[in-house]
Amino acid sequence: MNCYSFPFRCFKKVILRLCENSDLIYEIFKSGKRGVTVKIHSLVAMSGKTSVGSCLYSDLDFLDSFAVPAHCRIVKEIIHVLWKAPTSPWLKVNIDGSVLGGHAACRGLFWDSRGSFLGAFVCNIGDASVFHSEVLAFILAIKHAAAHDWRNVWLESDSTSALLIFSNPSLVPFLLRNRWHNARNLGIQIISSHIFREGNSCADRLANLGHAISGSVWLDTLPSEVHLDFYRDRVGLPNYRFP
Image (cartoon, rainbow, N blue to C red; front, top):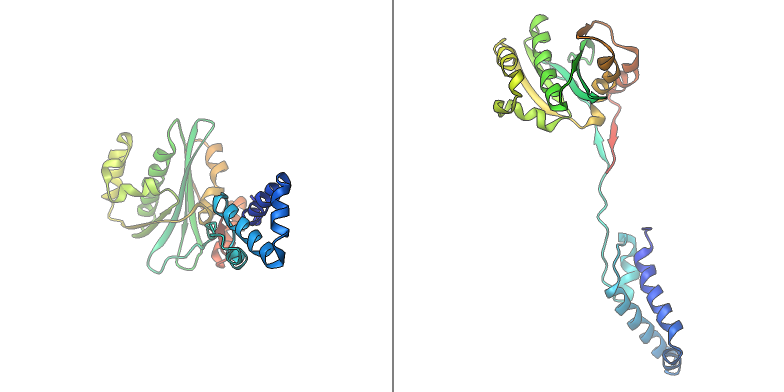
């Protein structure tokens, strides 16, 4: 529906009614100039009240002049998504999980407070759900942090459902509960947060690598397919989430 549809529908109804009723045209124009104006305003107002549609705020004055009630469309805002580096001594891990062709994989990318790359992991899980892969990514991130003696870890994900396990551990999949319990007892200080997928692009870019490898792999160098998104995030360039 274009932005002029609501006013256009009002006039369309009036024109169609006039075309179908020659007596109405005669009655309008025999009443003189003012009578014509009043009658047309009246017809437009009546047509507008029965029309279904939406308009922009720029149409308000126009519609008000014909006493037509405005039904403004709700314009959803474009969301500005910006990745933020952690503050020292915290490290951030952006994690993600996916299922492709029935096979699940997860990955995570570690950053320091300067936005520098510290390492990443990818894991091919096999037959599992996206939720399972997201939770396993949290577990692996905590274990890799403990192995590198990184004691303060900020876990960030675009999965609101997976993040619920930090407030309600009973949501952890049954097959992962022992691993979750062991990871939580490694002495790592953890905070967690949500970010829209558009701000989690680095972890998302590792998807193909996660599905291509066998088992779990730690990466000491930044994969080439992540370079562009990594440096965009590091210098503070925004991404946008469209409604």
